[in-house]
Length: 314
Ligand code: ATP
Image (cartoon, rainbow, N blue to C red; front, side, top):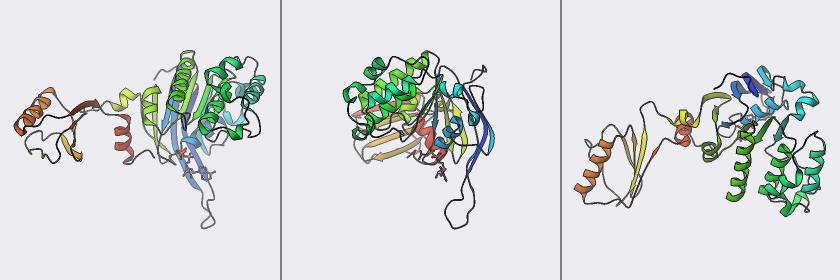
């Protein structure tokens, strides 16, 4: 990563909660040394299973929770002592929105915009995120995806230098997701530091400049998507579809993992070469089968995530 002054720098963050329940009254350590850096003009993504500590990390970074150890620097300042000047430079979209239910969406967005010295033009932002379609209905009557778009608009309207987005695409239909992603990319190109959490590995793969994977309150892996998915042994995955019940001869491709994942669906994984593909094709000829589908791909973020955590992201 570049070494210029980052938008956010977290070093060895520790957070304890508790006492939890009435049984033993002990504190529980939910963050145990999280470190990360988020640059200007980049999308930094935090991945992790439920309870890994993503939201708590963001809350400490925003100054909403006080850290019990480690150091957090947001735009060069301590967020737990944020001044109005620092707050005005930071946009936040929380997981549950925190939107007032009885207010109308456009009225809220105008109100939020009025608190900033140089807000984005409200009408253009509302149109861009499709808020004008439901601008006159009270917030309590909005769908989950509509609330998400409104919360995103509120986080962005003050032209922040850093924006925190907790699961920004949760509940969005595919079209809204595309609109939101385009907007995030444009703002990134203007120098905005975007820090987001998601459960959708596909989102991370499409948007992220840099990824941190959290597990049990620690940062267990980091890198660009290309770095994380590149395998030391050049692993690739080849899938093919044909008649069920074929069994791979033991000496065909012994260096690759081979499985029939579902009847008629086969996967080979490992350091695949063109020679391996030719041997596989020779075996198909010998068996008298012609696959109805073949695909090959590098490791996905999901593979990386599964390798690290040994479980699915949800
Ligand atoms: P999710 O994907 O479900 O949103 P997350 O990675 O954002 O999860 P956090 O919400 O940061 O995880 O929670 C991390 C751990 O801290 C969880 O075990 C959670 O139960 C615990 N936790 C969070 N807030 C509190 C709190 N106020 N008091 C006690 N425990 C808490």
